[in-house]
Length: 100
Image (tube, helix red, strand yellow):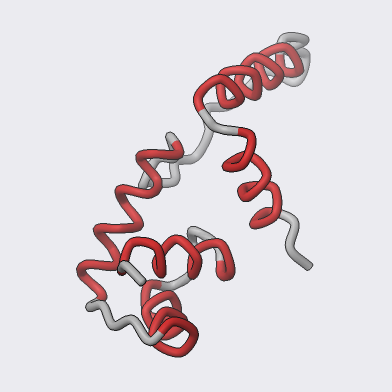
């Protein structure tokens, strides 16, 4: 199994924001694939770029509570994501977000 595939499966199991050490340990335990933390960090950065997720979390700008365009903006964003991602990737993201 390729390291990138093991990394992807580990992220599906643990989540994209899981600590790098946990991802590395999961890869070793489940797939017998060894990778150093720096390489795992690089894989995560690349994975986030493919998903269009920023590597840095920023505090959102203050919004007016009367902004009636929030729902429209949200739906536009979802539509744009659907155009960029395959149905399989969307399902995987949903599974990662809602795993019990």
